[in-house]
Amino acid sequence: MGYENIIVRNENSVSIVYLNRPGSLNALNSAMIAELEKAFEALCADPQVKAVVITGEKNFAAGADITNMVELTPEEARVFSFSAVYNKIASCPKPVIAAIEGFALGGGMELALCCDIRIAASGAKMGFPEINLGIFPGAGSTQRLPRLIGPSKSKKLIFTGAVVRGEEALSIGLVDVLAENPLEEALKLAGELAGKAPVALKLAKECIDAAAGVDLDTGVLFEASNWARLFATSDQKEGMRAFLEKRKAEFTGR
Ligand code: CO8
Image 1 (cartoon, rainbow, N blue to C red):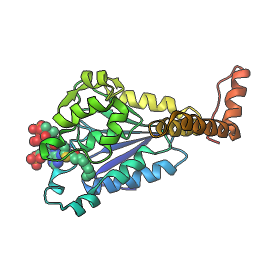
Image 2: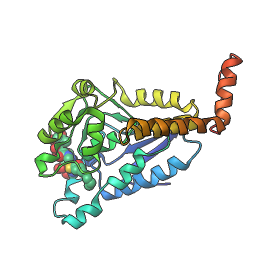
Image 3: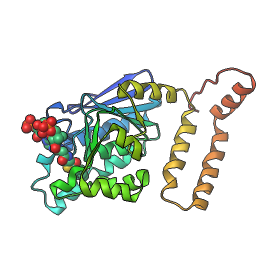
Image 4: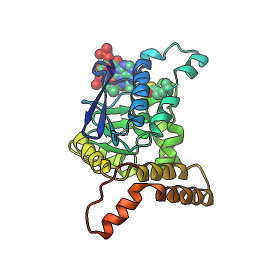
């Protein structure tokens, strides 16, 4: 499938989604968001794809496209919202990794927050400058950011619009890994995850993502139910038999 604002490449069982509007530092417009939605619908449904990396050459994304937003009415702003697509990306049943170079600002950083793991260059510049435009991040980050780094650090970032670099981002938990070449590092990790049991990854992701929204007892019950479901998979039998037979497990995703 051909896209104009993103590029999707497959390397073995890993898909790489490149944000690709370099002239505007990969600013996210409606067309790009629609393409991301299509791409993720396909990737999430494709059993050959075991992990996904989102990235952009030189820059991740400098935010939502401001030229699209200036004159929006409240009703139009609701329609322009990226949240539905971002929610779909966040709930992709496969591991999704953000590889961040250059700017990841506003809606760009919000997209990175929808990923399971963020790997950044130490020079990457990340933050939520929306406050300087008279708005705040509106594609899920007032909810995802506090769950990730806590409410007061979130308020400091969102209230000030400060842009933080790799080291500081790592120290507050905004990113998970710093790497000289984030894409290379992300592909290494994605390749490793591609060899794991897909259903176990999917159900573990569901449990971890549910943790922020439910009380502990409910979460533990949910975990018990997902854990038991694994025993209906041939990958569970294969993983345990391979251990006992002292060989490497060959997972099939069933
Ligand atoms: N939107 C549109 N165009 C942009 C954006 C953007 N977010 N960011 C950069 N560009 C364009 C510039 O206008 C410029 O275009 P042109 O060459 O035609 O003038 C080109 O990209 C290169 O940018 P600069 O010349 O400004 O490059 P610099 O290296 O001087 O500066 C910066 C880089 C600091 C990143 C600067 O471009 C900047 O401040 N960009 C805006 C950052 C920002 O405020 N981002 C938040 C946007 S609002 C948002 O993301 C809302 C999210 C909520 C979404 C909710 C659902 C819609």
